[in-house]
Length: 296
Image (cartoon, rainbow, N blue to C red):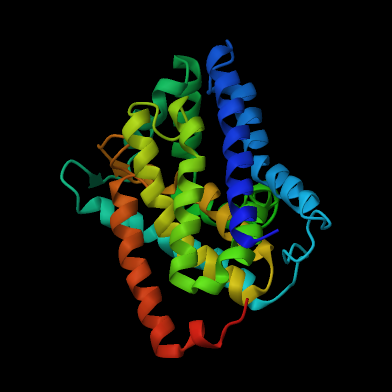
C-alpha cells in the first residue's frame, strides 16, 4: 500500500471514529463535564491508535511494526518534558502582555476562575486549603506536572501519538522536518474539532475554538516531531503531549481576565508564546545542524 493511501485511510478512519464518538456524546444526556465526560475524553484519545491498527493490518503488517512504538530511555525524553514546560511558560508570559489579561497570583483570582465549578461549601473549603499552602499552588504543581506528563498522561497520549508521530511520521518524514510537522499538526488539530464542538477546551466559543486549536496543534507539532526524531521513539512525543496536557491549566492559576479564546496555552496567548518558541527552535536547529543530522 502506498504512503498516500495509508495516510488517507488513517485520516478517514480516525476522523470517522472521532465524529462518531462526539456525536454519541452530543445526543446523550452525559454532557462533556463530569466523570463520564472525562472517561469519554480518555477513550477519544485512543481512536488514532485504532485507526493505526486498522491501516497496518490492511497493509499486511503487524499493528505497531515500523512505528518506533517501543520505549527507549535517553536524554531526549527529559528534553521533551522540559521543552514542553518552556512552551507553557512562554504562553503564560505572552498572556500578560495581552489587553484584558494580567498577572494575578492571588487566591481570589484562582477562585474567580474556577469557582463556578464548586458549591459554596466546596469553595470555602478550597479557599482554606489554598491559604494554608506554604507557597503558591503554581509552584507546587510543577513537579506533579512533570511526573504525570511522563507517566499516566504519556500512556493516554500514546493513543494519539502512535498515529501522529508514529504512522504519519513514518509516511511523511521524507518531506522534511517542517513539512512533516505542518501536515501532521493540521491533521492533529482538525481531529480535535468534534470533541471541541461538544465542549472540550472552549465551552464558551466552540466553533472558533475548533479552528484556533488547529493553529495550536500546528505550533505544538514541531517540538513533538523534534523529540520523536531524536529520541527514536513515539514515547518521546507522548511525554511531550502528556506534559502539555498536565500543564495546560498552569497559566490559569496566575492570570486574571480573558475568555477561553485568549488565556492559557490553548488561547491567543498560547499562539503568541509558542510561535516565539518555534522561532527559537528553528534558530537552534539551524545553528546546531540538528535537523540535517537526524534520521527517521
